[in-house]
Length: 323
Image (cartoon, rainbow, N blue to C red; front, side):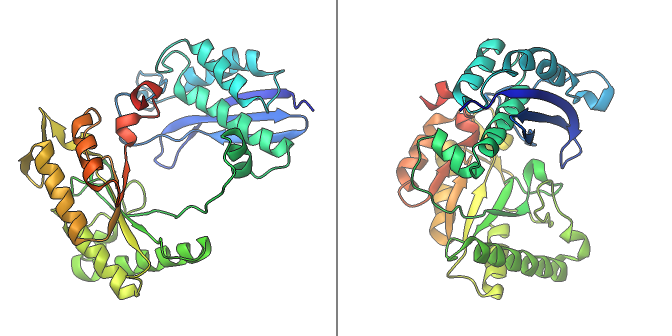
């Protein structure tokens, strides 16, 4: 059975940071879906390119050009196609763009349409979205994800002196997603009370992604603070820690500047290994700069069998870099 796309329309909306982004509406065989495109505060130079308007309007961040690309170019090719043919739709948009980094039509335009097609197809097929995506990816075994709570912010996500961008708690010992949410929320509020008592109410202000931004100064201080909150809440056996360093933000001239110290890649690896040895850290994202393949390789070889190493800025969902 064919599920023909009858309508596709994009508009400019605003994300949780108050920045413009694209929202796409789609209709197919009586089904409707809507997709809004996310955007990070810190982005890698190798990531697919968002098309922004430039100029003075909205500090140059407007997306009316990308919206126009959806409504005037993409929609004319997509409307009439079967929304369940996700690969054909995505490949068509890649061909229409014709660049390696989506800079002509915009990754924001292409992604918005792609997500909208995926969501409306799931509705037409009367399948949960996760199940439909798994089907597209030829995945048969489902594993319930562990929520990762970003509870202390630094770097570009906050106005404090922390170089590391995110400190997270991961309730890996929970027996269900509901329990995991409960554990995370309880530790979050316990942490808030500790910060309030120790640093004052102003320190409970939150950063870009909802984590607290207390006046901490060193890499290890937030880890000790989180460990204390987890202990007070009574969940030492159920909650581990995760870090997103976003190391490209404190890398310059082949050196990393962390806590006021200049470090080589090898010295930073040694520091990270010491943190992992003394604290229950099980996930480490972007520990090195986006082009520091050597440090990523050494670090993963050393600790990759024990913890999760996430290479967001290194790989950038870029097939050539993954290869």
